[in-house]
Length: 401
Image (cartoon, rainbow, N blue to C red; front, side, top):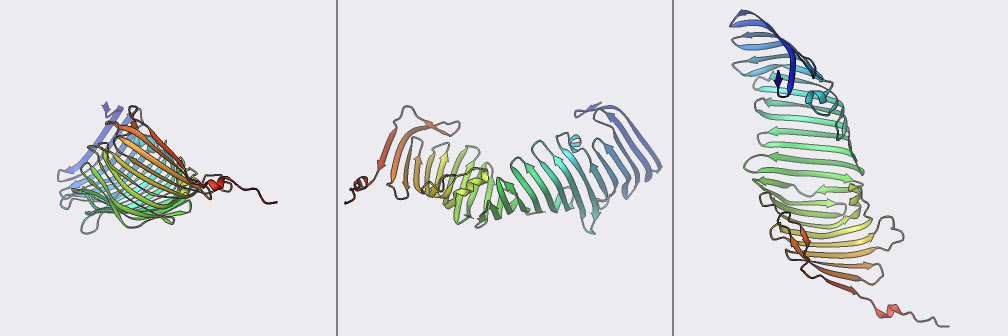
């Protein structure tokens, strides 16, 4: 017999019952043999006009076992009892590449007013094709069952590894109510450099789906990043908008807002940044040298009638590995682009040297399918190079004898 890709080679079902229809006791057993492994389920049954109880539940299957008891009261529709489980081969149980083991318990009870469910799960030595977790522990309590009304949970993990990303310890606490879901997450780890992070966010569902970020305290490579005030990400149909968010980054600041229409792929962004340390590049494993970067960027109507304005100011720049021998450089760059042309200018000045400026105008055309700019071979390229210097500095009079 085949069911959902699962092949059963042979099986046996046993049922015994005794008593009247209004008051029955019995036993049920199911034994199945398949290529994936043998399955065995056995339980005692007791039923009357008020409730049904399953006792001595025992399930053995490929990679796991479940045991416990359950009861259901018809009038109150309350489930009581509990189940304990152990999964020794979760990849086989879930039909995926997942190694390790997990143990846990689910308990159903009546607090005198409502259906309650508590759960606890501990996993160890978990490994997938993408990473590993040394230990995972989660627990919580749910009010209601189908559907759940309220829930609280805590999840802790240690030694998560996924490529260059590592988390030594992390803890998440969450709460689900009629108003939505809120989560507080704190973690310590390493991604190219060490980090410590804390974030609080909430999600509410309705005509608009709203994600609110109310807390962000992050230190990465010794650089602190802190949220200035709460901001919202609003999903309304096919439109996503990010209300203005502000952050302090080291001694600098970052502000921005944006919007995306997924139907038309039109994207808009407005952001400004002031004295952001170039050392931030170490977060992604790139050494950008010393200095600070400031400026702003505006993108409007991307993929339809795109307009781009970008201003960048670089202060005290020294390239990586040359800090001692290379004099600091101050640089200004400006880029303006629309659907017909892109104009860029750069001014650079080494400490104590004459400034140098370069201006370039490029004809561009936009692809309607990707919204990305490309060079227009039918247009004209314009360039301008200016070097301002005092001519007296080019001549040094001989020293008097």
